[in-house]
Image (cartoon, rainbow, N blue to C red; front, side):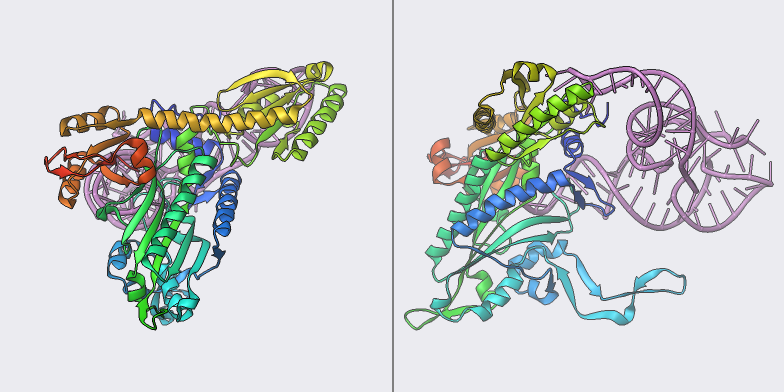
Length: 496
RNA sequence: CGGGGCGUAGCGCAGCCCGGUUAGCGCGUCUGCUUUGGGAGCAGAAGGUCGCCGGUUCAAAUCCGGCCGCCCCGACCA
């Protein structure tokens, strides 16, 4: 048995790595903390990117590309920002190598750069340096841009997709004339992320705002979506920041408003990354491998022909190709795997591990009876159905799988969300059950820090309207630790 | 950066403590035959600077010294 997957009940972390590798999403690279994204993983990212890109463009954003390298001095211009990122930057100091007297490659001392370059950990600084030249008047605003790029953060500890030193993401950067407009933008993006997570990834999320200690370095407010993984740990799936005028101040970016006054520009930035692939794996997959929501699956339907001899082969393949055509015409992504180098049983397993939502098997029996065997990945059930009207049947099946995955994940999330009122209960639930814990907090960083230190749980977010209502967190109470008054419950969890 | 583990065939490992012909095993790969509706079977074959550098020795995967790298757990983080 190749590529055995460790069951989740035995070792969840190992299961995750096993699934990623068995499903051929990614490999380790020769460089510590980096990963090779394989065709299956990259196709998934391309699908995610296509959906998000469309949503960004529909809301008026345009794509751009800024350089990978940022002058070192830029990073120092925003005080909180430098503090947040300085510790994890890759720095370029030389422009060439040479052979030393021992024949080893070393950076050529003569090529030392006048000013070091950093490999972007995020692009606010270079973008606001540029905005300061693009923006003079209120007529230049708003600017709504996005870029699909790679960034590097020199992390101590990495995990495939969830935290790698280099990762792919999109980063949106916007400039506005008013505070209100910028906040509105940040929340609009948060809604896009929410829609994407729930309707495409089939992953329910809580929309919230971060506490000051969990905020993006340089932001005034960080909005986020938080998801719950199958092991009861939370995962920050996307963030949207209201940056206030912090970067405008740092890069002296002012505009003349309609009252003929000079004013700093208001900003947002927002991003989601290849981490979402990790989130997808940890939301739906099982001990048999990857489970993908149909709306993002690179292959929605795989067709597997079964035959023993040439006569059967030609009859079966003819039928299989007709079905492939029918399903492709209906708009599905379809793969007919007619390779004779692998046997049907092997293929069944292979596509199950890779999470293909629907499998159609066609053998001599089916040709004779005008049927096909339809199997769905999410429930691992199969049935033999008539071959007529197959496209509609597949459409209904894919829709049902998409809905089932979301409903299942939502039920799990709800089941794993617990209201607690005492610190004892909090610790007990955290240890024995995990998940999201809704508890009162007095709003002080001291209490937050103490809870984190004592339990490793952090405040994932303070729910915004939609989820505050759904979760019933907007009620007065007393902090579970200090007993001080609290205006609302917040979401605690151990996080990735 | 602290704690732990590991570098031997493409992958996963044994051998090392106690030095001794040609360094093994499983999976994978290749060839052939039989198979093909849930990860095939049999037979044969190919594949190795034992992480790197140095030392001890008649002899080093094995002992000694140094170096490098990776993984896991913590602190930090999308």
